[in-house]
Image (cartoon, rainbow over all chains, first blue to last red; front, side, top):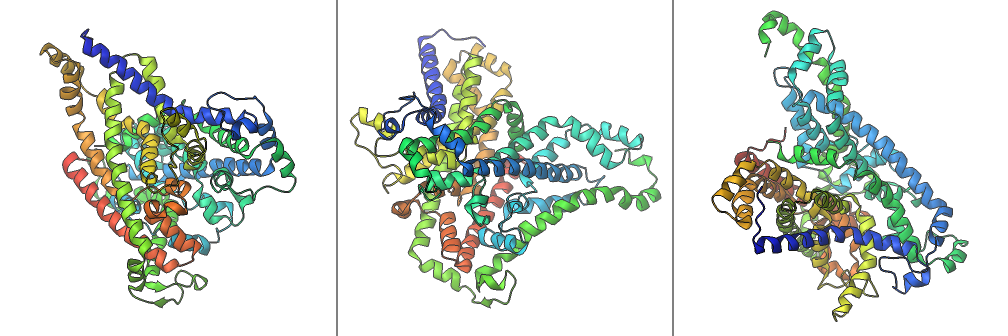
Length: 294
Length: 310
């Protein structure tokens, strides 16, 4: 495109870089602030002296968190939840999206099933009835309450089935002539050609399970069963000191509550920070597919 | 396609056998959805009962007609929660459209690819952080006692503002921080629409003497018309979604009058006060209204934008 050399265009350029740069920084600065506090001395942090650079640099808060068993236990539960939860999500997602991606002449009941799943996006029983069902099915207070009720991700299924439908039918016809069963076609034709969509779905489901906190609070009986985000809520949002034992008070003299909080907030964000920039092209592709499907 | 290959009689007998794998594939998903989506849906009957949890979801409960709804209607907190929900949701819906559209047009004008890509990556970041993490961060930086934001405002002579604890500022803070969290991620669909614009249109406009702003206004924006209408229509379904995760982690007793929303109200009345019937009645009200709006929005999206979900 021809770039205009007019002064207004140049002024706009400068302003535009400034605006976009400012917006981008506004998204990063809060996290840097938290990181800086976590590396500062407690007195500097409590006194509000820390902005974007650590004051009186110390690793004391991280040393404290490293010794804090509750944090690592919650982290472990979250990791397990991501592994099992995403595994289940992918399993159901592929198994449901594949048949639903078939044309009507191949699978007559496609529409009925589609509506069966789609309706759950329109209506829901809400908090209390689901709570009762979790209790009835014996999941209350168990790890499974975190992964089973949401095991069938309807939105992701729709995303994936729309992607499956773009796979050329000739590939399938050729496989049928070679005598492949539908199971094999799904697994050996569709899955390998849909890695971008599968990565998108896996990413969405990973972020969901890592960030989800409400079910932990709702369905777990005691805080020591909490996944990381639910655990973090009790110390960061509730602002109670109840999670600390008597021995912790000594450490508290050295490390202020604020620096410990910030250290844990930062540690909990690290997995996300590491993963999302590299999977960007996948989720961009997936989001676009999901919303612009015409 | 290729139907003529199979003889009609063969097709008839073999059809079920051919489609059987599809049914089997769907079976596990159908069962899970039935248990955890459809049974809770039928559990909405709680709304018409004086529900005693110990008797179970389908136990022998006492039916009380619309008493739970009437009780809610007379409850001052419920009406205020509804009002707050609609106000907060309305501003979020509007700004979630305007800001991302503007930012995506501005981003498209950035010629330096490295800068653009870095900026994009950074503005997607808050979307991926939970409201627990962001809540923790916001409680700290918005604090009236030496919080980062108030320190900066102090440089301009502004008195410390209690963003999260004052009824004058709480709604604004909710709307602002939610838009801040999601605006970047929401640019994705608009940027995709912009990338699809035929470069010839820009060239033709340039030859016709259109300057840069005119090109943005008369080429870029009109080409985004479809996606804008679509997003507008689809966002209608959020009229009663003020954002439970956010509000629940940022609100406190002193801002209930402006910040309490239907979802937080349902949570407190249901799980803290154990009034299951009343909470479900409110949930049902929310569900019915939302379903109505979502259905209308999908219908409009289908009618006007030829949007089909499957």
